[in-house]
Image 1 (cartoon, rainbow, N blue to C red):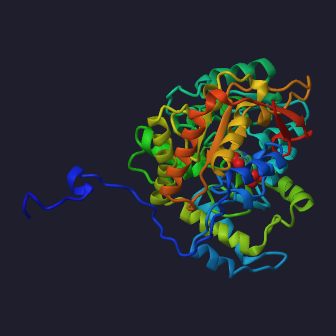
Image 2: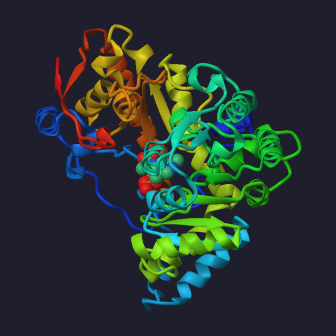
Length: 470
Ligand code: PLI
């Protein structure tokens, strides 16, 4: 080779890129639209991205929930559905996968995560009891409140600061928790509600060290510890990368160790487990399981299908095994990070460090001239759609809802717009397009005005609320 031979980028810089550990076998065309079409669609949707028709959306980053692509193996599994009312073979395959990878003893399928949240809340919470947790999630807190519980946020303070670089912003503040236990009495704590990762904090992880200390504290006071395992596979990657002693452990090993410190878990399988619908509830205690099994037949379906078709359970069983592979988790979180790095390089305010499933734009810093009651994050989601047809989601004052007692809005510290990346769906080129659109909206930020809410539903208002431009 002579000096004049052109070199590739890789040869010149020794660069080694990562790539998705799959190739594309089937494609779904995307819909393009004009600015006029988007303006019309946004007004019709009441400036709420949940009310848009998906046909009017170009790149859909509303959620990573049920929006992932299944593998050819999962689709093949769908064809092996055993649609027996009772004792479907697919249930046993699912049970086996959950016992193998999550390690819990007793399993119930549910139609999705909130079905499982409903059952555990009804079974375990007594009216007036407290439910401490590492920041709220919308459906989780609502089910805890509907069961008579009082949710108390005991996450570390760093989680509420979008620029704090703490590596485990999902951790529980054990001092806050112990103060709560001592002031209310251990018998008035229903259980500790631990999520890994923490969605509303930006997809931030919990460390194994924090969990072990939490387990010791809950044991000391005789309190149960239940896990929202929805994105626990992604949490396991952060432990592998950031926590001493875990670099040589596989995601599967870390996941199982983590779950082993908890008394049970609920799951929205529509995320980590790589299916379009489904959930589960798992506990180790037989007496509690019997109670939950009684409830599941009332609200979901028989205990061997819980509202799912046999084929759904089969796809989930296969998805669970795929989801814990290290190369899958690395590329999934790697794509989220790639988008985060583009935005960070352009000085766009996002929650740092970048979490597992989404980029959270810091709408307060984006629109410092808007008051929180002018819905900055909702405004940003609307502007992004108007710019390019990209759909995102508000995670701020609209999502936080109202205090059931006083009727006042909750004013959360975090006012965020979420760009949620579906699993195995979009390419790096889509991420470039998204970053450029966010930049265009950022450049026009000073001339942007806010929104007012003109229709407000009673529960989970962010789904159906309507807004108008101020
Ligand atoms: O949407 P479900 O009912 O399958 O699951 C509810 C649920 C529970 N826990 C957590 C951490 C979630 O993120 C969650 C649902 N999340 C949605 C829909 C999301 O867009 O983030």
